[in-house]
Amino acid sequence: MPVVMEDSRGVLRYLLVFSAYTNLGKILQNTFNDNHEWLPQCGHLLLPEWASRLLQCAEGGQEDQQLQCASLLCPQIHAPGPPIGLTVGLYATVMRFLVGGPISFIWDLAFYPNCQKYWWRDILFLDNFYFGDPVCVGQAWYLGTDMQLYLVAPLIILPLYFLKKYGKAWLFLLTAASAIIPAAIIYQYNLPPTSLSNPLVTSEMSNDYFDKIYAPPWTRASPWLAGVWLGYIFYRQGNTRYKMNALTVTVGWTLAAITGLLVVFGMFSYNRVVVPMPL
Image (tube, rainbow, N blue to C red; front, side, top):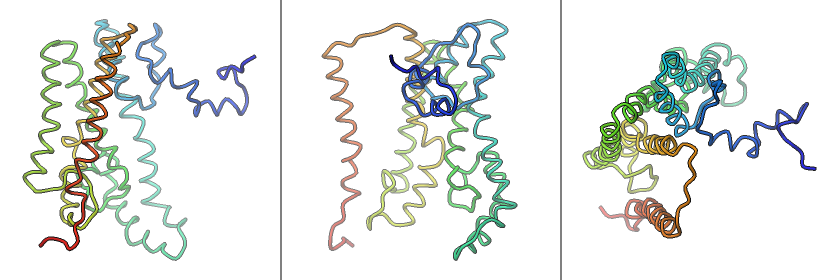
């Protein structure tokens, strides 16, 4: 008789958080229960699921759903705040008393003073705007980019429901702009098309690429907007099951493979070292 993981007791139940069997279906679920059991949850939702739920919430049209719609911002804004605040607080205060070893002086020279001066950049999720400057928790820059995109998300997602065709045109425009803007900046400043490390790419070019392309939300929005599109498709599809024919599947996988190969091997001219190097 198969073991039902949902009925596990004791220590085993804590392993369920790592179980694809019990979690995969919940991650991909894009419908609500009648009692809205998802509302108290403040876990970080996948963007397509979050966008789909926001559209479903807007579709309800009930006055009592205003709070429910507002609560959808809770998982994205509330979840990373306490951990970042706790980390910054420890770095700026007692952590220096717990660090030891031959290179522990680096903490006193860099981490400790930076966290005392620039803690607010992490708390307010603004690290990505100071990518080349001293920061406290430098690796948290991507949370700033993510947070800023989620804060403007209702202005992008809700028109898909309330304005229909205009909302879709708005999303098309933003998607096109998300590709054109970084391309224009790369062309204007003669930057590499991606982050590369070879003699053809100077340290100045790399620093400019990270500051102007890698960190700002307006140049990182393309994959995020792809998630919005997927969430919109989830919303439109609902619980309807579609079966694609063989031609559609073949064409789709072919285009996906060609796109992937172009993304990888399109860097050839930038990622090729010639010896001796041209002057």
